[in-house]
Image 1 (spheres, rainbow, N blue to C red):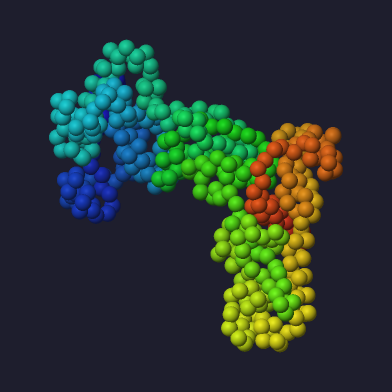
Image 2 (spheres, rainbow, N blue to C red):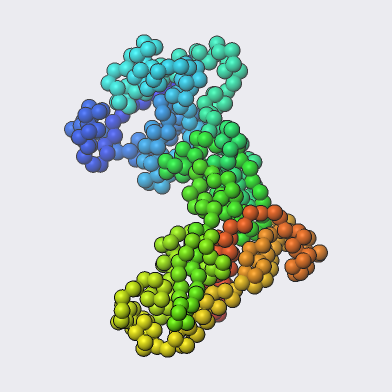
Length: 440
């Protein structure tokens, strides 16, 4: 039905043949069965009528998103993008009829004396909603605040207003963003190459956790980094520092375990998983004991280390890996101590060989700026920015321009993974270029 703001000026109602059987539970709710719709038109036969009735008008319903989605999906099934402005009488009722125990259509109609015959039937619900809307318009015209506001302003909820504010505020740049609650506490930290687009994805998400987060957002802060790597590092460091309620990854402060090497009485190099604080010279550090064990398992599979000399086999005779030909036999005197130690020490040295000074240059926040990430002895030392004309690949020069940060060991892992991903992308681009050349 068509409402002009004062009363209903046009009505149209029809059943639709759904081209399938009506589920029993739907029939119980609506009292519509297959026999009642067998001669009804299909949706596409009335689609033009619906378009004509709704064109340049606002789609009004009680819990409008629920009803609108059904109509929109039907149009979508034959490729038409049905778009209309929407107005929800639930939200409008909460503004103009505050402090009600229930805002269901049935309860509101009952309290206001609006007849609702055949609830859950589209025509009956529409008739009742139209009468409710008429009453709400009368209330609006006499309301000391809302009478001066248009319906769109009244009908827009807090979340929608904040969403509009945030999306206008955020730029399409690479950086880190922080969602804040009404107490200005950071509840989520993220990074993106386009932080405005990433915020849109949050608002469009359907999972319960994200919807709960959206309901708590009151503001946003953001920091442009120019460099994706710096955004990764800043995001990781801030998640650990602030521990936002809606972030799961990278909250842990410390790497709890490490692998260390030592020689036993036979001068055989042993490896051991130990608490990080007990290790002076770690080969590598890990969040969990399981991740450290998984790392050693790779060395076992490659035949580099023997499980017996890593604390995982305490029986006499050959270890299991020797039996499946993944161990060279140090455990049963089939390999010399010299050979075993040499191979293992080379691997340990290789693991530590990346620990050198390094400057990773990247894009800045403007066209005339460059970013840099520093590693000293293989350890993340900080990041910063410089004008491209004054930039020097000199550690002392750049250390004076490093932005203060709190170091966490997984920063080194982030840098390593990022550089590897760039290398993979470079190889993929080169291969693609070769294929294009050969095709030509």
